[in-house]
Amino acid sequence: MAQLFFATSARSAVGLIRKGNEDSALTSAQVIAVADGMGGHAAGEVASRIAITKLEEISSVITNPEIDSDSAEDLFSDSLNSIDLQLKSESDENPQLSGMGTTLTSLFINGERISLLHIGDSRAYRLRGSSLEQLTQDHTVIQELLNQGAISQSEIATHPQRSVLTQVLMGEGISSAPLIILDAKVRDRYLLCSDGLSSVLTEKEIKSILKGKERSDVVDALIDATYINGAPDNVTIIIADLVETNQEQELMKIGAAQ
Image (cartoon, rainbow, N blue to C red; front, side, top):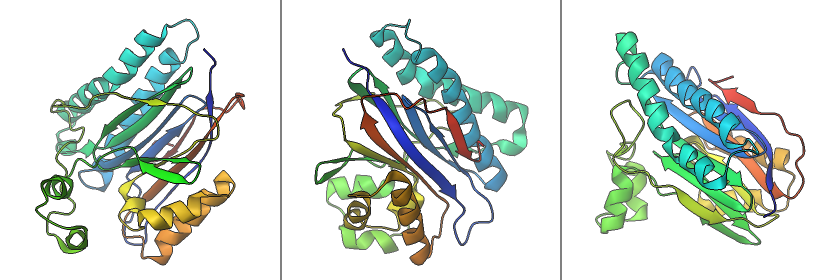
């Protein structure tokens, strides 16, 4: 089985209203992730940093050529529990951080299989040819209401519970976050982002920017578009193209985890 890789560009920016950046992200040739912290500025920074730092530790194990595929995927899947336990430990030691939490959306490519971990309302999209697909479903009250047909898309922007999460990493255990396995195709383009992007731009607007541009140009154009639309939140974006050759990309952390 051939090993495919991510070739990435990423950026994390403070919005026009926030005073600091609670987002964190990680990029490497085989693991990418976005985490959006919450619980107040300082606590949110800590929570997303813990998530990305713990995932960094785990990625060094699961990308080791000596580990078998099943074990690597099991460890990746269990990383949510490891992060959750770390958050609990940090909160117990520092009561001022009580209530902190973070989303996490991450992809791990192992051979020609991509594993997707997701909790919260950060998102993963895949552009394959001319088709853009949202790979994750938001863990929010709004998404549950949409699934039930209780509200329409047009009601989201003004709904009083539009920002309420139903699942997040807070050191309180995880109810359900199954590992999703995706097929991998060379030239697929992946977008991982915090809700600072997806809550501002429509899917149609995102797709128009994703197509036919260099990765770094896409990242800049997406962030510029959020600023033009007011950028009420921090915005973190990873663009990852699937390639056959490892471009010797070093692991990089950005945002609060930097």
